[in-house]
Image (cartoon, rainbow over all chains, first blue to last red; front, top):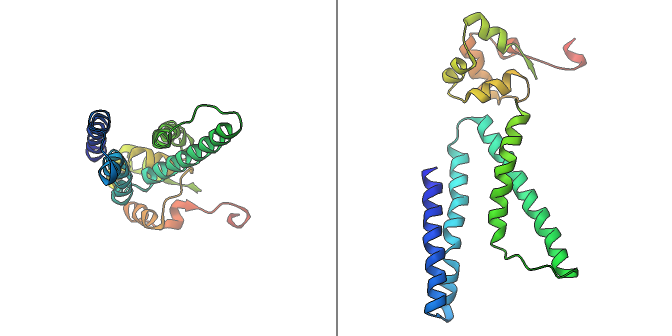
Length: 121
Length: 68
């Protein structure tokens, strides 16, 4: 949990930093690409943190609950992303930026975890 | 998978939490295995058998026509 919240804290700092830099400094070229990607790094680190959790978790039941919840997260994100993609294509609904996929994934995981757990009671 | 965990626990007067502590797993894990909703891996089944001083076959019961 410490690693997860550390990565999220770094994310909050970097998202504010990147936004501030683009708003006030208007960087260009390779620097712009680098600064634009900065907030994604802690989010990718979260995936590594979850991977480490799955490796280190010795309780196979807890590991199963996490894996199944994450599968729901992947499925839910893909489903929503696919539906929204076609809606954006054909009926011109507002575009949802791709970085929202990460939040949608964890939102679905958050809903799925207690449901998956309940199935084993 | 059906099992005799509840009986074996009762014989030793262990709660689910006691068994969970001895196995170093969560109480939810013990409950899920006991209710037959989660099948443990072979290593965990061996740990259970060792803990109860018996064999895996004496704890876990095969389901279906072959079990009769």
